[in-house]
Length: 66
Image 1 (cartoon, rainbow, N blue to C red):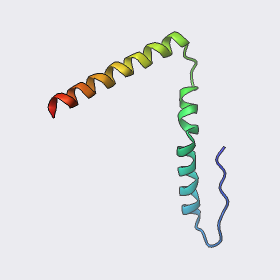
Image 2: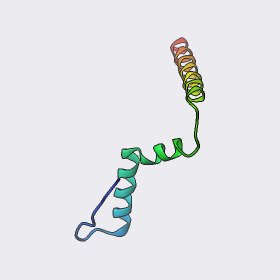
Image 3: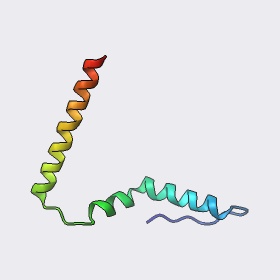
């Protein structure tokens, strides 16, 4: 859990900015989004395989254009 304390002479905006940065760096939001709905292991494997295929195709296209 992200925790920030108000520093002396710090504005609310900068405190909020630091908090948001900590939350994004900790990966809390991505975890929450991922666990929002239940996904079976087989479905998760299928999704990961699809991502890997897209990644490799993108790398191949990038290598050919060089």
